[in-house]
Amino acid sequence: MPDEAEANVGRTVEHLFREEAGRIVAALTGILGLRHLELAEDALQEALLKALRQWSYGNLPPNPAAWLMQVAKNSALDVVRRDARLREKAEAIADALEKNPAFSTAPGTFMADEIRDDQLRLIFACCHPALAHEGQVALTLKTLCGFSVGEIARAFLSTTETIAKRLTRARDRLRKADVPFEIPSGLELSARLDSVLEVLYLLFNEGYNASHGGELIRRELCEEAIRLATLLTRNPACDTPKTHALLALFFFQAARLAARIDEAGEILLLKHQDRTRWNREMIAKGMAHLDRAAAGDEASPFHLQAGIASCHCLASRYEETDWARILSLYDLLVTTDASPVVALNRAVAVGKVRGAAAGLAALDEIRNREALQRYYLFYAARAELLAELGRNEEARSDYAQALSFTELAAERNYLMKRLRQFDIE
Amino acid sequence: MTKANTQSATFMLLLRGGVSNRDLSAEQLQRQIERYLSWIEKLRRDGHFVAGEPLAETGKVLSGKNGSAVTDGPFTESKEEVGGYFIIRANDLEAAVELAKGCPIFGNDGTVEVRPIQQVPDA
Image 1: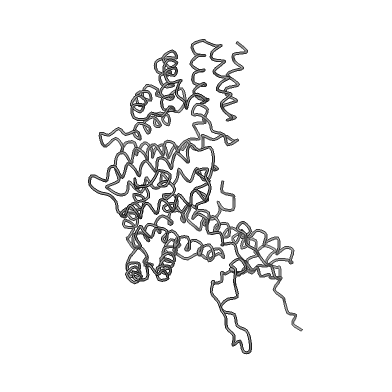
Image 2: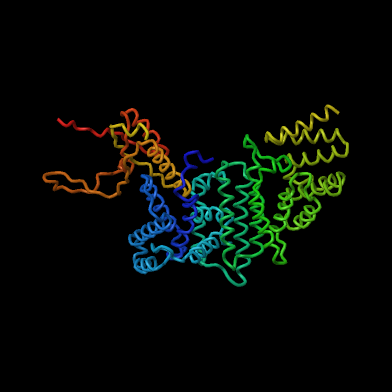
C-alpha cells in the first residue's frame, strides 16, 4: 500500500524507473553485446543511484527518462574505458553509443520501435531454452523489470545468495551457449516464443498464487508479466493469437486480484468474492484479447484457461456461471494439462452440469492423486456433492477433513458454518 | 500565508549517506525519490523550505599557506560524505529537528546534521 504522502506526488511517472530499467539495459546490451549483460545492468544501477543522489533535493531534469538513459550510457562508457579486456573495443563501442539515437538527448527521437525491439531481443535471450526455468524467470525480473536480487529472493522464498548464484549461472549459460541478441525468425520463432510465453506465465502465477512474499511484490509480478506480454504484441512476429490468449488470461485473473483478498489478507474463493469489486476495465481488456486470440485455429492451454476465466468473469453472480461451457473447456484442458488441480476443477464442473452423483464419481476417479490427499478443496468439493445427495454423515466427515487441511480464515468460517448446519438438521 | 513565514531562524541540514545500498530495485529507488519529493513538498507548503541542492561527488580540499595544499575530497567513506544540503526556516532548533525527522534518508541508513545558521547582530 502506498502511503498517503507518496500518492500525492505526481511529478514522476508511476513505475517510470521500472520501465526505464528494461529499456536502458536492453538498449545498452544491444550495443555492448549479451556477453556484457552484467555491465549494462551495473550501468543502469549507477544511473538510478545517481538519480537518487541528485533528484532527492527537489529538482528533476526536464526529461527524466532521457536523463537516465544518458547517465547510464556514460557510466557504461567509463567502465568500458577502464576495463582492460574492453579497452581495444572502447572507441568502437563509444562510437556506437554516441551514434545510437536511443541515447540521443534530442527531444522527439522516433526510436521507440528500435528500443522496444531491443527489449524483445532481451526477453528472448532471458527466456532462452539453454537456461533453466528458474534462471529464466530470475534473469527476466532482474534485467527487464529492474528487480533487485533481494526482491527476487523474497518473491521466490529464497535467499539473496541463491538468487545471485542463479543469475550468474544464467548469464554464464548465455555466454557459453553464444545466444544471439535477436528476435528469432522463421521456423525457430514459434518454439522460442512459446518459451517466452511460458516464462511470463510462470511469472504471473508466482504473483497470483503465491501465499508468500507480501502483497506488493506479488502485484508487481503480475503487472510486469502483463507489461512484457503487451510488449510482445507490439511486434508483428510476436503478435500471435497465443500471445493474446495469455494476455486475456492475465487480465481476467488480474481483474479479480483485489476481490480475492479479504480484509484480513486471506484468499477468498470465487464463490465468496464480492463481484462488484472485480475490475471491469480489465475484464473488457481480457475480452478484447480473447477476441484476437480466436484469430487462428490454435486452441492452446492458454486459450482454454482464458476461456474458462472469461466464463467466471462474465457471470455477475456465482449461480449464473456457464458451467456447461466451462466443462467443455476443462475436458479439452485435461488432455494437455496433467495438473491434479485442473482435474479437480473439471470434476466440480461435472457436478454442476451433470449432477452431484456424476461429480462425485469424477472426484473419486482422481482421489488417489498424491497432491489431492491433503488438499482441503478436494474434501470441500466432495462434501458439497455428498450434502447435495443427502449423504449427510459422509458430507460432515469430508467437511471436517477439509477443515483440518486449511488455515484460511474465510474458508474455515465457511466450512464451520456448513458443519453447524448439519447439527441443526 | 502561514505563520512559518514569520519565523526568522534558518537552519542548514547536512545529509550524509543514504545511497550506499546497491541492491535496491528500480521501483524502490523511485519510491525513495518520491518520498523526498513529498517531504520537500510538505516543507514548502508549510513555509519551511528555503533551498536544497545536491553536492557533486567530486571536490577539492584546500589547506596550508594560501591554500596551496590541494587534495581531492577528504572523504574515505561514502557514508561520511555530505550528499547535499537543505536550508529550512523554523522557530527554534527543536522545531528544526522535528522537521528533519521527516527526512526519508533515515529509511536508508543515512544521517542528518541540523545546524542553526548564526545570525550576526548588527552592532
